[in-house]
Length: 215
Image 1: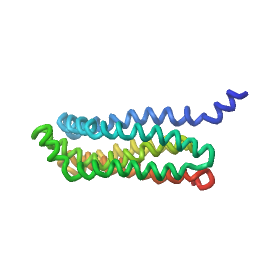
Image 2: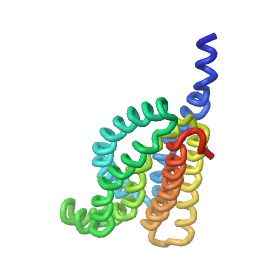
Image 3: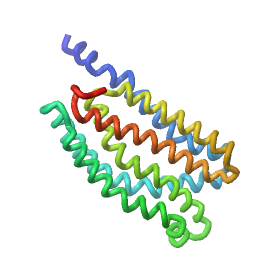
């Protein structure tokens, strides 16, 4: 009986979290597929290199913070019914850490890539300008989205993963229609992806306030 009670209580972990992880892995490969289809191998190479370059420092910074946030937010939510205070505090810390790299990549990425890696990587620097928008919002939204699990909102998380997949595909198809220079597909993708991260941030903040005010 106890096992059945636990299984019913946490059924959403199986029904929604596992499919969400599968979709997330699929989404990560989608830009490469579309860039190969619409742009070619050079675009794929620049995109992959830029993603790794921008993603590594984000992982190092976020991993330490997210572990602390998970623990403190879970404890606060279980004891007081909300975790808004730690949510807001972590949001400020993550924003402070992300804003300087974002500004640097937005204004100086092509020059930095050319100076450090050579002229053949200038376009990768342009990709860094574009993707810097997405990485800025990702570095803030991804750790804080753990509130979805604390509040038991895995179903909504699943549908937002579907939205990620939809906006990614739409961004590349629309960009391919309107832009002859295919690197602007990356810009459109970055902006569309960032919009979904904004939704994650807004909803996560609502959930952090507790069960009474959840919409």
